[in-house]
Image (cartoon, rainbow over all chains, first blue to last red):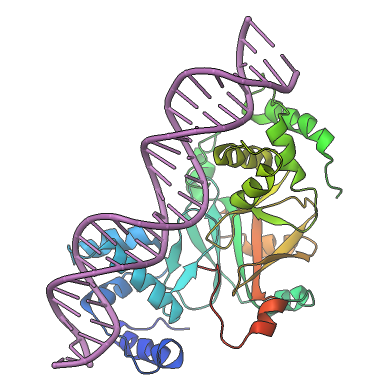
Length: 160
Length: 160
DNA sequence: GTGGCTGCAAAGAATTTGCATGGGC
DNA sequence: GCCCATGCAAATTCTTTGCAGCCAC
């Protein structure tokens, strides 16, 4: 699935607004929202709110962390970015909308993509326990290249 | 795999201590640690630190939250309980040591077990991207019975 | 008796929120 | 011009930590 170009964001946001939050309201394409969204145009980035904040500040020095948080929430609700609620610690966001999974390095906390098809058969297998299954989150745990090399008993890094 | 009875905890803790943390030290079986561990003897409970704190306080009114956190960390490191780092928001702990997955209700945040074999073939499929895969976390998302029934547009509950 | 453990309280990290002002549409 | 979005700062929530006294071994 192709990445959504920045120009389309406003349209998607409004579709979303009309469909869910408030049929009457329009979500505005502000400068802040545009620049935040630009951070996710580069594939394979998995940014925390603070990462985004620091990046965006180079273009908009006065943006506030609160605005970043508010927009990450709105954008992920609208399906424009993906919220990675997995793995404790800081929350991360991913601009890649094509389906894939993630690995998290248990040592340094780094996240990478695992390109893979969705596995609907997993959801099948999970049904029949009183829940209506809507989907799943799958995150692999492992050691990244760098940590494998450094690995002669190191610190546990960001993983908590 | 059978649940570990409370009497064995001390032994396991010491095995763990000797193997990893500090070969010379012994972990003690305090009253607090015992009662905390008892909370996980009931199958199918998925407790947050605060849940544990509130439960334990009924037996040990003076226990502190800090102690609960410290012990949950120690017990999960020793493999006596499982830390559920999934799903953002509060961290939960699970006393069931047999392999299973979890569903989280997207509406109310409730967690349930999905009894299932581990799926090593998933780890296979994820290899070959620079990471040494050690395992995975899999959490399903869905609507629990109660929320399906109440469901005529409700609040989003604890899910954040 | 010793060293790990506890209670207490304060610190910390991540995230959310209230409010007056600003700026898309 | 209306009303959503922003900046700022304070507030919340969850978790960790420093320290002096306590207690399991």
